[in-house]
Length: 242
Ligand SMILES: [Zn+2]
Image (cartoon, rainbow, N blue to C red; front, side, top):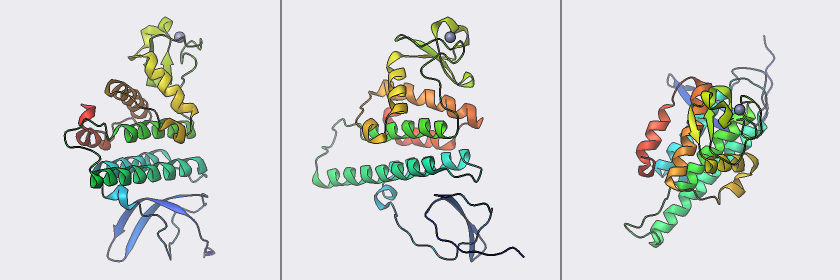
């Protein structure tokens, strides 16, 4: 018989699957990874429920998407303190953003018909999260030097190819899968070296948002070998994306 020991731990619930009437399997992202596969949860206490996030469809969908990404990419049982912090911070930001939006609506600060890119900051958060998640698991995108010839990238239009790991210089244009504007390269570098608290002040126009999203999706598609269902759902909820 295996020795049963109990311990107390803080975790983010990524997924729950009900089994029969009384049991369910929880997929947890723990602060400290443990060696066993199926531990038994005997007691749980909700610390943060993200109520604002849950009451806004867009924010909730963003939250589900981030959780899905972590669930897909983190498979082993080694500690991922950085990813735990990244996910928790992102969920907290989504919750705060949803709260701010609800308050603005209640106070009538957002006028009907006013062109406000409500989703701009949260879309940027998704890109920030994707970039930092990939770095944390060892798939850091090459943004300083050409991913093929290693020459230093210059401030000009470059190219991009996910399967080669990132940005490609004009001399390697035969490998380009897409063009990469200088502005998107600057944004990618800024996101990669910044904390979210700094990056969250960045405001991008729709074209730049779309280009950034396409590049990040290329990278994720390459590593996951598929598209994620959340992408089309997020597009549907975000008129600015089309
Ligand atoms: Zn090159």
